[in-house]
Length: 242
Ligand code: 4GM
Image (cartoon, rainbow, N blue to C red):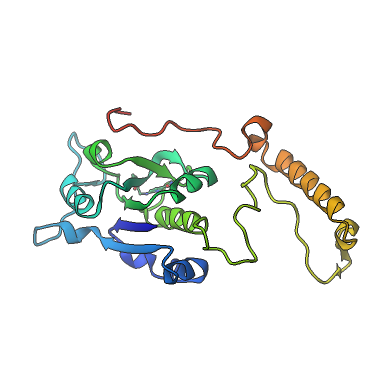
């Protein structure tokens, strides 16, 4: 998969995506990641990317011209253009799985008060939010999306780990895990895990996961829609103006 990121803060991306599994996926060629400075698509001396809002009000708005030029230079027919914004549909594991099937993503990080509406209307295939809070810019949300998607790419996780066998893949929270020592400061590992009865262990884990999900995340409990995006926010249609 190819991912191009458009940001005013490319320096923020050095570090988080240069470590561990993401770095390994990049080196293996599973992920081709390119971070771009949006100001590279400006033409004025001051590299202006934003301007005051028509109608007045606080803050600045990202101008359409640099973003249109940038996206037009990066996108092909296989590209999904995604804006990171607090008003996007909420990103979750189901959305991550959906994006992991794409060939090419262009992630557009906003800042300030957001994007000129024409960017949303004419450029974006989708708008995502990583949660109901406001950050100074879209770089961290973009990194969250990149991380969640990359680890789902076939071959990204080592032999020991499988993304099919984890929290959320069955729409539930994970069961409790233990490793050695069998007793630590008086706290014992549950007997069932020590016995080697795999059917019993499986049964125990299922029950634990179900109980934990019911208690901590009742919003996730519903057999019919297990593992799917329940609160499916409508996907964006370019024509629709909402
Ligand atoms: C306003 C409009 C995304 C602010 C567009 C971006 C939080 C998220 C920004 C923007 C952001 C999020 C920048 N803050 N919840 N700040 O995913 O891009």
